[in-house]
Amino acid sequence: MASDPQRGQRGTSGSSGAPDPSGSSEDRKPASDEAHSAFTPPLGVPYPPAPEEEHPTSEFALPAGLRPETPAEQEGSAFTPPSSTTGQHPMPVGATAMGAAFTPPHGIPVVRLTKEAPWQDRMRTMLRMPVGERPVPERPERGDEDTGPAVPRVLDLTLRIGEILLAGGEGAEDVEAAMFGVAHAYGLERVEPTVTFTLLSISYQPSLVDDPVTASRTVRRRGVDYNRLSAVFRLVDDITSEGITLEEAYRGLAEIRRNRHPYPSWALTVASGLLSGAASMLVGGTMLVFVAAAVGSMLGDRLAWLASGRGLPEFYQFVVAAMPPAAVGVAFGLAHASVQASAVITGGLFALIPGRALVAGVHDGLTGYYITAAARLLEVGYLIVGIVVGVLSVLYIGLQLNPGLRRLNPEQALGRYNEPVVQIIAAMLLALAFCVLLQQERHTVAFATLNGGVAWVVYGTLVYRADINVVPATAIAAGLVGLFGQLLSRYRYASALPYVTAAIGPLLPGSATYFGLLNFAQGHLAQGLPSLVQAASLALAIAVGVNLGAEVARLFLRAPGVEEAATGRRAAKRTRGF
Image 1: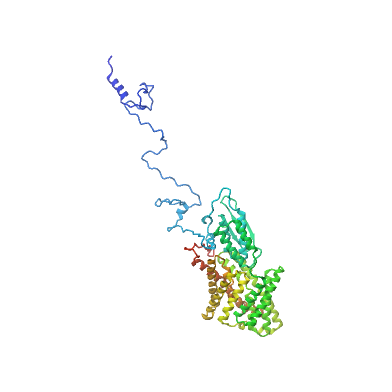
Image 2: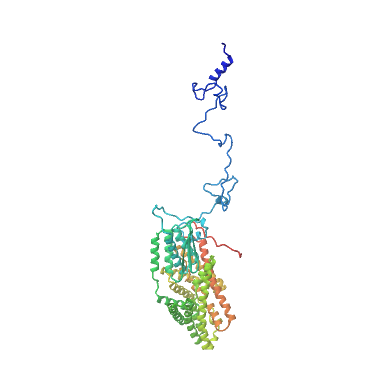
């Protein structure tokens, strides 16, 4: 039987023309209709290459030759500004959407908190920052068993330090800076200290989802002791810069509380008499007046101590302290020595005017702590009213005893006394006496005394030589006092109060206050009111000048050992009246 040539050719072609995907001719399936699959290529068509097992394909795989789509932007928060979508400037590594949207053209300024700078500058820089922008405190490496100091103990130490500072007359901003520095040094990041006139509080929240821990402390007693104040400043510097442990900090705080005052009570009484005598010589008093003013002031100081021991409020202590100097002045007036009587009473007023509280109150107001400033100024008002009540009571009694005392003319009581050498010596003695009354450390007394002498030299030159009004002359002299005090405090890493408070003593408005009170006692309200307004203007000029001098020092002076000035603190928000 003859074979079909085409069929044989097809069979030959099917057996040899198409490669076997399995590589073996014995495994080939028989050529029948049942053996054919819909996915089997027909005879004569080569088989496709088998897919690699280690690279399986998926129906969602991107075909070759197509460009991948740009990934969709991640959904952000409603409180996060969207990042830039222009694609021209890629986001740097580590940048966030917030940083990309608000990065200034010259970059973000770096907050440098070097430990060589005074802790006041470092903490003021951070105090008015938002919580999210504050640098994270440096934390040493700890093991699993060491969890660091307990949060309640850190908050307790912080409040105790703030209590001593606030009771010693420190400004609210510096108290908050010290509290924040202590908490930050022990690893508490999200802390918010709050200082008012009598209440200290601090709140710590570990994170946004954790419950906050809040502690508070009430300041019930205030005592002027700048020696203790300086010791607390050194302790805060050790905590924030040296990294002492919590136990060492508690031990140092206990030693500060146990320390006795550097000067005994009798030394304070003698210093009060020296202050009044020196103030009487500033306005033209003689040595007799010096002794009389000193005796009257010392009697008033002892009466004030007696009233304090009996538990009387501070208002009545000032009332009784103002009576003896006024009584001695009335005695001189009865002896027809009007100039000497005015000098005695003026010297006694110098020792009683609360210049320290006034400067602290105005400073708090200028730095944005209005509640504390209002409370301090209200306290100053009460104390001045106490002085007025004490002096007016004695003057009224003197006028009733001798109506001839009305011949004491306030306009002629104290003339334009101009003896530069005597007045400079008296000003320095006055500042020295203030240093003792404020319980300052002995190594600060010389600087404060010299600062007081410089203040009077500047004031006398402006008033007696340049014929400048007393109010701007007082402000300029007080500004230099604040500038020098801030400079000394920055180089000694201490508080500026010991170098400033005593130095403003010669600038206190004792004469203007006396003129106003004497006119009131004589029934001349129209003449007495301008004198009291001038006294208030001088007091405000002193406070503003001291604060302005300190701010100028912070702006332009560098701390010792720091090559680049630290970033200044942010200013208080300006409301512009609305």
